[in-house]
Image 1 (tube, protein in one colour):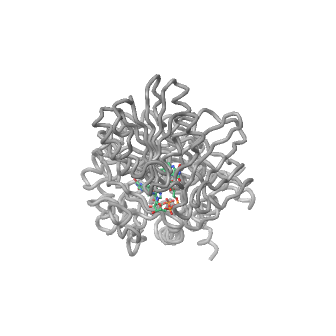
Image 2: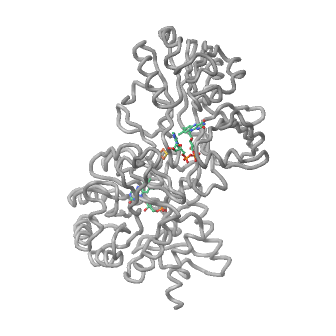
Image 3: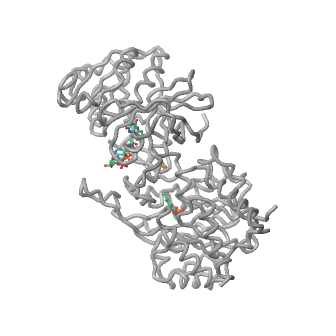
Length: 305
Length: 255
Ligand SMILES: Cc1cc2nc3c(=O)[nH]c(=O)nc-3n(C[C@H](O)[C@H](O)[C@H](O)COP(=O)(O)OP(=O)(O)OC[C@H]3O[C@@H](n4cnc5c(N)ncnc54)[C@H](O)[C@@H]3O)c2cc1C
Ligand SMILES: Cc1cc2nc3c(=O)[nH]c(=O)nc-3n(C[C@H](O)[C@H](O)[C@H](O)COP(=O)(O)O)c2cc1C
Ligand code: FES
């Protein structure tokens, strides 16, 4: 038997596979396809202080090996999460993380203060990297100073695990990672979507109502891997890698680059069972190559220089 | 019924017109009850530019043989690759998706289809007839090529047809056809087709004070309510077409 457990600070995950925010609903949407209890964790949809309707349709453009989305944080607000959704999902035997988003630092703080009281939410993912909202969102994640400031304020208000989700739309992601680590982040996850655009030449119009959107899927994997590797070599806190993971081998590449855990995003749309298959695939890989624990391969490429 | 992900085998791939075809897909396990208006998401093999699954309405269901039929119009690479698929090939489906049409009882109903929007109306009409409704059809298309399965439809009700070029039935849009002057005679209208057609019909139905159910075809990524890409504006805010639709009562839409 191989040991799939990983830890972020003192929080145990039964395996290193989580589902990415915005791609797995609240878990319930996938209950017919996967046993949620077999996942390391789920990260629910971006949650803001107030209810948001998101951007107008069309919000999605397909690309040859990925997609652009401009959903724009449609959600019913944190109170709705606490009162309606949390009671329905809290029985899952896995770590449920809430992805916290907003336009103002005060809003982020207000959301995490409310989440602090929920027993079955052991951690939050602080989204400072959403490219699809006009204010805030990605802006917090694109400079070291603002990333540090928001982490510092949220740290004061939240006493459980904070994972900060980083934007790839920056020139030096490792610097940003370091600045949030210095302000008390327990982990960083990367990458969020890359800013992109699609145009319909026949209609001579942009495809998305917002013109630009966030690119995800296998087309971003090489960029994500590179960034995870850079960040893992810069910070001491655990790095959670994502971006274009479609199968177990993709996930293993992120672990080898230095990620302690991975998130599965867009792949859930193509194969709603993929998250569980990736857990199994990682176990099979470790067994096949005689590794005893996931930790044996985390950052392996950096050790064997 | 629970949502499933399964491989189906193609037992027939038949050209219906130069740019459309009918797939009959057999499931190896007994099919559970599917609601009319629900759809499937098909994984397209061998198409480099097709990353996401493709949604298609369920045209008909044969529970004895465990067969689902889908009618597909070729509009891009994904549908073209599906057209090339052969009998004996496997296709991976996620199904059944969406809310489906509400089935009234003992009423007189009109089913209006445009182009590939005709597809979901066959299975719908069978279920409506089982519930003792009187069913009429009005179909529209650009030309004769867009109209299909007429013999099957005629077993379920009276069919009238309009084509833009006049190659079959009345010439013009279906929403300008004779039947549209007697909408009051119906208790409800069910429709699927191009959005301009459905909007025109929704307006006529509202004027005639007849309930109008539309099936929308917004572009989708996940098909199961997780990504929020497929939303339409309703009087109660944005709703997912894939889970809270594809069928909506037009009075709930911001049309
Ligand atoms: C719930 C639902 C049910 C559907 N039922 C059927 C059906 O029974 N039969 C059928 O032939 N088609 C149906 N469609 C539409 C079908 O899904 C698209 O035609 C198909 O996805 C196009 O794939 P493609 O790769 O060939 O084209 P693409 O290369 O993706 O697109 C080619 C062109 O078609 C347009 N297009 C793509 N998707 C849609 C869409 N959803 N609505 C309108 N235009 C689109 C694009 O804008 C583009 O101009 C349905 C769609 C939905 C959402
Ligand atoms: C439709 C969609 C919605 C998303 N919503 C969110 C969100 O609310 N919060 C967030 O932090 N990331 C969101 N993301 C980004 C993903 O969590 C992930 O970072 C990104 O898609 C890259 O991973 P992938 O290539 O595996 O999908 C969303 C992505 C998609 C495709
Ligand atoms: S297609 Fe993803 S929510 Fe409807």
